[in-house]
Every structure is written in C-alpha cells, then in structure tokens.
Image (cartoon, rainbow, N blue to C red):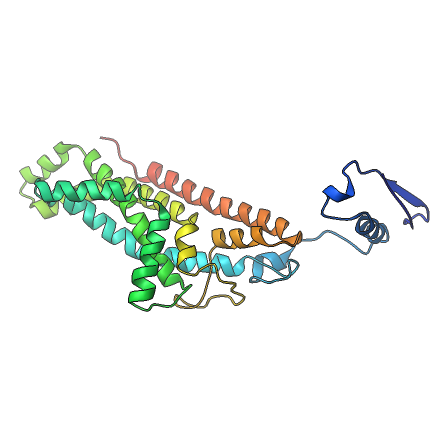
Length: 288
C-alpha cells in the first residue's frame, strides 16, 4: 500500500492502495505521491497534445512528435507510387496481352511470382548495395526509400494487374476486334478501363503493404535520428514504422505512450487505404 500524507485539495491526506510492488513498476511511490499532489492542487490537467501531431522527433518524450515521420512517409509513398504503378501496369499489360507464350515469358512470370515471396530485407540489401554504394545516392532520403519499396511492391502490382486483365471476358476483346479495332485499341480502349478497378485495388493494397515495412528501410539508413521536418525527396527523413521501432527501443517510460499513439496513427492510415481500395472497387466495378 502507498500512503501519502501530502495534503489534498480539501486539506486532508489521501490514501492510495497499489497492489503491484514498487520493484515491478516503472514509477516509484514517491513520484506517485508527487503526481497525486499536483493533480489534487489543480496543477496538472488533461488537454489535446498538439505537440505530438505537429512536431518532429526529439530525445525528450514530452517534445517528440510524429509529423516528421508522417511527412517522410508521404514523400516515400509518392516515389513508390510514381515508380511502381506505371512500370507494374505496363509489365502486366505486355505479359498478359502482347507477349508471346514461350520459355522466356514463362521464366519471367515464374520470377515475378518468386519475387513476391522474397523477404523484404533482401530488397533493403539490394538498395544498400546498388542505390547507396554504387550510385552514391543520399542516405536516409525518401527518394531512395521509395525506390526500394517500389522494387518490393512491383511484383504485387504486376500479379494483381494481370489477374484483373485476365478477369475481363474474352467476348469484350472479340467484339472490339470484330468491329475493326486494332489490338492496341482493344486493350487500351476496352480491356484496360474494365480492369482498372482491380488494378487500382491491387495497387493500393500493395502501397499499404509497403507503408508498413521497416526492414528494407533500416538497411538504407532511414533509422537515423531526424529532428527537422523533411522538405524534399532528398532530405533526410524517416517513416512511421521506423519511428515506432526507434521509440519502442528507447529506455524512457514516456516513449511507451508515444509508441502506442504512433501505432494507432499507422493503423488509421492502413485502414483508410484499405477502405479506399474497397470504395474504388465498388464504385467502378462493372457487371457483365
């Protein structure tokens, strides 16, 4: 039991019973007495923590925020989408509609399926060896992180896009060719618009998967302690999963609450992205 003789607001002592031994708690009895005294005298109050949402990282848990990681995640996702979406959709269209069926295309298809199952840490090692060491690109920059995540997301987008193109009935292609449309016109004017809802859904799900990755970004230095808010694609930055990883490793007890709050923010982003994917599919899906 913890017995405090500090005067409360009414001028009387108060008693708090805590069953957990002091050795098993991260806060001592003396600190609990101080906090209860400050609360009883009205010197402590609960309010919205705007510092957490609109500031960057800090060594002090009271001053640490997630805005820098949010901006870094946004810039990284822009680079990932700009690279993975056009290349992935183009590769899927070529393999599904134009590529001849031979050993070479079969080998490419098998390798794409295998790349989708490669551990993400391998893509981080590839980014470290190629982008940083060979090309000398800036370390811990959203442009490098986006390129690494684009490599990891490409197989997912290609597989989802091919499945969407394959789901379009052959009668659509036959009807377009029957009225004189060329192969290119058939694909881009008829097949691709019908397959686009599935392609967009697969792309958003792939981006959500990339947003939750930590291992490949650790290999390219995005685990660095970044205080300033990144202002461009080549500025040092970190992303939310890496920020959560760093805060969870800090010994200060105050960072535990920061870690939990950052996890909730990341979950909100993932839920929003998955909800957008479902809405797009239902909004643009056509029945035939």
